[in-house]
Length: 88
Image (cartoon, rainbow, N blue to C red; front, side, top):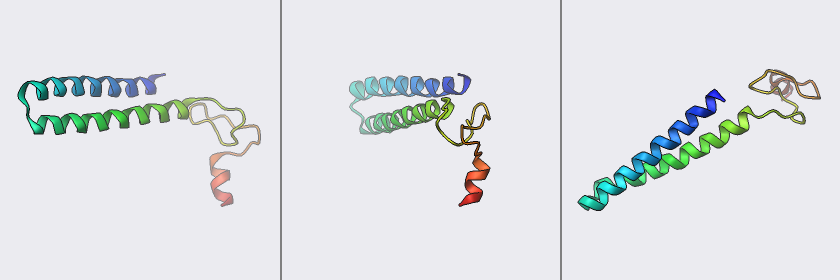
């Protein structure tokens, strides 16, 4: 999937940043670099969460009543997203 590829890029970049910051923090003993490493670890967790969300978003489901975001197909009940929200 093209959209999922960007999620993997984000994970890879954040892993590289954490590794670089860990090396710099060990070599220099700088608290600022350690703080940046922790910041990048949190960004890595966020990127993993986004990747999981992208996987859930792009999967096809026959039992979910709303349209598939990727294909635009309707579910087995025939209710689209617009129908669902107008009923509320």
